[in-house]
Length: 177
Figure 1 (cartoon, rainbow, N blue to C red):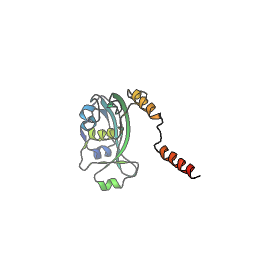
Figure 2 (figure 1 turned 30 degrees about the vertical axis):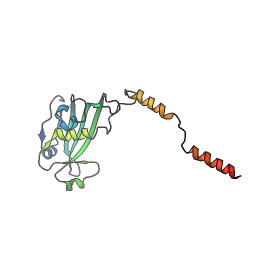
Figure 3 (figure 1 turned 180 degrees about the vertical axis):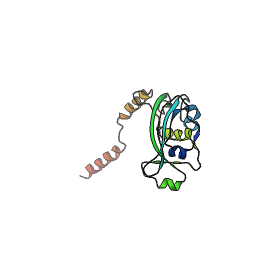
Figure 4 (figure 1 turned 60 degrees about the horizontal axis):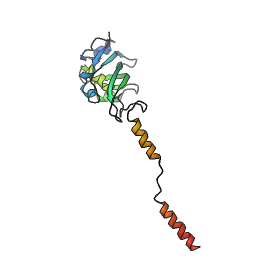
């Protein structure tokens, strides 16, 4: 059922009250905020969502999203694949006041009206899963050779500019004796 597209909007309160589940896909090209961090807009996100109410009466969305994105390495500027597997647990609340009272196990999902745009919620989860500075592993990066050359140059010891002061001091101390 993962080939089905997820609905655009749902009422998360009603879905939680009825303990409904959704599975489907979203296209990366439709996520404008995420696209701005990518080298390619190709790909899809597979998502499984389970709505429910816990033993404390808190409405929640438990989700699992997977995708493989194309990012630009900030060392060599070449593209590379970056896999994201995101599991999240969100408490559905109307106000920030309700969000402040949530147990630590939940992240708040603020829904002031009865409408939740699923793609935006999943896009948020993917955005926080992105690396701060995307880079290949050093073994796979084409900038490795340049980095190694620079690193080897940095190992060369340079003369300490304060050696001159030390030699003057020792001469002065030697003259006094």
